[in-house]
Length: 166
Image 1 (spheres, one colour):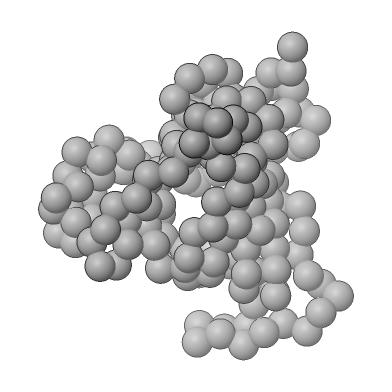
Image 2 (cartoon, rainbow, N blue to C red):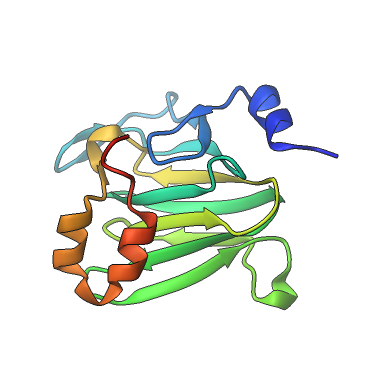
């Protein structure tokens, strides 16, 4: 049986500030960087990302870039998306389309995102980010700010906000 520990070791994953584990797998060094309003970025970057029984939540965060998520192994991962206009959307990334699970999930830049492993030992995905990921383009969700922007989603915000002590 392949476990979370297997993936952490085999892929050289490290703890991620959002929760879970990650490792950058690609950045488009062979192409000229592209200009964005906040600086030059790679055209594309990608990572492996793993949620585990011990670290089952990808806490609320917002990226400026568009992100494609691809499910690879393990259990399904549920995503909660909060759009600037206040809409909430839930999607499940997993291997069973007959149960409504998606193999690929696109999340536009500017959308708040939280994810969680609902059962099992782990869920392994990868993400492709365009323009390429830069920490300057990511905002970690602060409970008070999110509650002000999305008061109707108070339960979800509190459940998936990163604890302030971390």
